[in-house]
Amino acid sequence: MANKAASRQEGADKKKPSLVDFVYGVDEEHRLLVQVAVKEDGRCAVFYNRPFKEDPAWLEFNLGTQQLDFVLDNGDSRDAGLPLGNDITKNMQNTHQVLMVLMDDETGQAKEGKYVPLILHKEEQ
Amino acid sequence: MSGDGTTSNEPNRQLDVTGDFNKGKGGIISNEFFRTNNPNAAVHVSFVTDLNGQTTKANYPLGKPTTGNEITDTNALTFGSHRITDPKGILTGFGPLERVAAITTININSNGVAEYPHVAALEVGTPSTGAEYPSPQA
Image 1 (cartoon, rainbow over the protein chains, first blue to last red):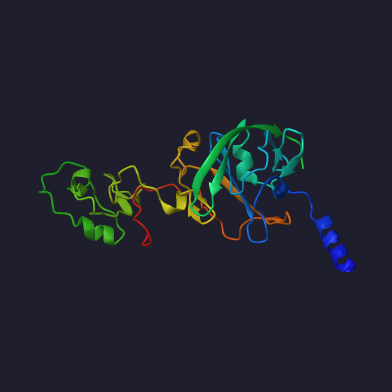
Image 2: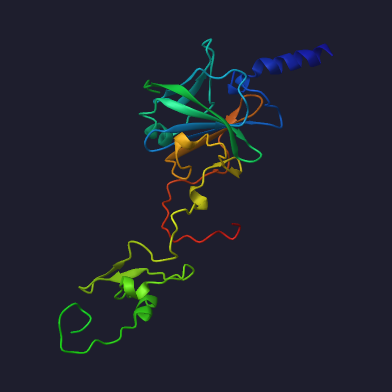
């Protein structure tokens, strides 16, 4: 019993901080889907399917590492988990705000939208 | 000689334009020749021959007239397995959904492990030719 509890605790310890910490409704059957779309003129939208517990105050994108961070008012932040890629990076050079759109992943319908400031960083990898 | 853009006393001969096209030789085309009022009619041209007799690949296909409202499957923005819809006008400021330059999708499981979807939800960068036909599923 104690071993089982210890094992569970160990599993929890292994769980690294991720964007999942910021949203509701992610479990073994329901994943968080984040989709970043950008246009040639720099207009950018982030589509996601789980509501945030607290709205991100701003986003930060590192043009070097291609990492997108979601930052809360208290300074806590989580990244999107993987680099966004060269095509996104190329088109986000002049992006200063992001339209964050909560999606209904059962229908593909946009449910809520909010503009959030974007801060660009240019640190190399 | 007739048909080569120079003047001649020879009577104009009837050109087998369609036959030339079918042989991949091109032919002489004009808007008048291919004009149609039937939106279901389609003429596909792969090669054109200019007045100097030079045959080149057509830089645009003649096809089904477009209405300007076509959305091709390859350019439609999807989320998960669904085409994105916006009945509330939330995406108005973002503009047309089929004109996205780049897109990246990330899946994150309950343990925080992120991965790119195995199958790309969207193929972008394929410009519409205006001659697309609806997919059988549409």
